[in-house]
Length: 432
Image (cartoon, rainbow, N blue to C red):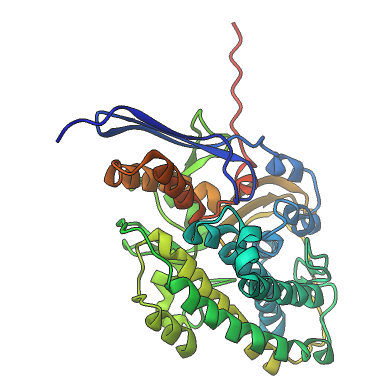
């Protein structure tokens, strides 16, 4: 086989991701010589902001890290504080947290599927171009997203950066009559989501699979959202408290976000593909059936098919919301009283894009002494670069414009929340 000339795939600014990042791939003599998924958005130092603040402020401050998945930050930080104080939130309060989280999954997954990812498969630059030819499809996606936002407003107080969650529960719990009108809307959203599963399954997917280590939460009784143990398809099974014994973050010069790796193993994959592949048996029979009819097995190793898996989770979140609202009884108290004490607490929940880990060290009066936050994009960053390396290696003969398009698409399989991934940077200054 004759050698192809050297080529460089360079995308200065990735479109349709959350935040600012770029992509650089250098190929020489038919071999991939260098791959860099660059996150150059400046670090925002949220961990540093948390030091010296009261524990009760953590859910409101960390929610500002992301406008798409603020609930994930509120839930992980609240759980970490409760873990430090020895408090267990259960019953209807725990269920209400799950309902709020379902609202976030619905709005986030609808945004990702319809606005960020589908244009790649349909050959359009963005959803506005899709709307010019298929307005009903875009309208369906926006309506599903709107219903998720509405659910977040009722339970969380507002749709972006909710103000109602607090450590120990909620400032106020909704009345049954406030939630009931959502049932009919969610039934519509469920049917629309099942149509979304069918729709996305008709897309053309690159022939690409990789033997990932999938990592997600796993709960004995439910599809994981707000709790469980950390497991993987390579044998990992640990408590959330042991996360840092098994995973570490590394700084590379080309990105302002840390890269995570499974210590002694390497890159790992978090998010819908991992959740689905490790918890298929916990999905409802309706969503399992939809997945099978879409051609998915119990596991999925093709990252481009994550758009189908997200659509399955979208349907699951709608169905789960209906179930919770139909059984909802307003609890007598909206939160559990907290008595601060010295200690360290750990929290981990399933943000729409994967596990979100928090750890806090607290003083006797509840003042935060140290904070550590590991978002999904940091955890997936090495996996994204691994995908790009193997994808380009396999498709090196593609025309350059098509190769560039599909490399961007490979990044958007994860829709990395880039701004979320820039909270932490080890700064070293050398003085002569």
